[in-house]
Length: 211
Image (cartoon, rainbow, N blue to C red; front, side, top):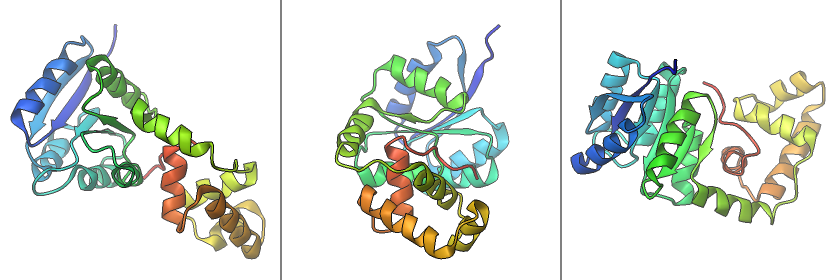
């Protein structure tokens, strides 16, 4: 028997929220257990209901979906977080992934795509809207691939390791770590460690880091 996936739905527009709920609950295995019309209510209801997946809009009063995602990842790391929004700008996507969201899907997605996104997030997979992923693939064509060692360094950087900690973990020198990071920045056209991590996640090179 298929388990029911319990959902917290947060969006400050009641009509939009009702439509999304209708789409989701057409699936027999999905059930919306709570709705929030602002970020503060979303945090309170997540703590109260402990849903399997929190579906969050970005622009909400009292706390954005990105802020709620970051809070959720810090306080309830087992809950899946899916950003469902109209904003497809790269900075929003990067911020959502950096905050720990497991998925980022646009409201223009078909209902069955939204349903599948919730299921995938529940299963621990990373989900990107096809339109966003297509842009990422197009950008990836311009990037020189990262080496296996560079991916190892970047994965540790994504988990918050310092250069010294990365060198100890991989048994290489600090100078070598710095060299790898410089190559990574160049290949991903990134100026900072955070930018490199978020771009790598958007490209599917790196999974969203655990809390």
